[in-house]
Image (tube, rainbow, N blue to C red; front, side):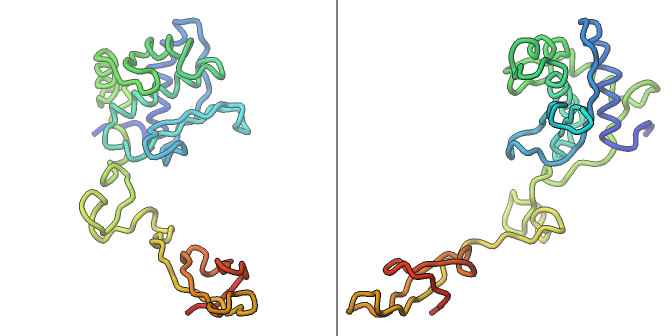
Length: 223
C-alpha cells in the first residue's frame, strides 16, 4: 500500500495543507500554522479533538490534538481535524459561532456546531484523499488501538483484552479505596465510657494524616 507519510501527524497536516487551505484561501482567509498531534485529549473522555490557540504556545503555532483511540476510523479523524482547524482559522474567542460556522460549513461539516459530522461531500473528499494515488494523502499510517484506545483491564467485558494492563505500561494500577480500622487512645479527651475510640479511615489517608472523630487528635495508630 503506497503511503508517502510515515506518521499520523504528517498525514493529518498534509490533509490540512492539500484539502482545507485551498478552501479558506478561496474565502479570502490566510492559512494558519498548525501542529497536529495524536494522544489523549485534556477535556474529558468524550472529547475527541481539541485546538489550543497560538497565544498559549511558545512558538505561536496552533496546537491540535486528536484522540489517538480514533485511529481505527481515518475518515472520521479527517472530519475532526477539519473541525479543529476551523477553530484555528476562525478569530480568537469565536467558539462555535460566527466565523467558525462559516468555515466549518465551507469545509463540508454539518450538524450541531459543537459536534460536527461529515457531509456526504466531505465523505467523498475524504475517500479520495485516503486513496493511494499520487497526490493524495494516502492511508493513515499506524494502526487502530484495541478497544478504541480505552484503558484496558483484566476485569470483565468491555474493559479490554484480559491480562492487558489498565492504561500505559509505566502507570501503576489504581487501588480501589478501602476503609481501614484505626484507633485513638487519647483517654483524657474522650468521654469516660469511651477511653479508646476506634474508627475507620480510607486508605487514601491512612498513611498520611487522620484525626480522631471524637477528640480531633491526629493519630497514626491502627487496630
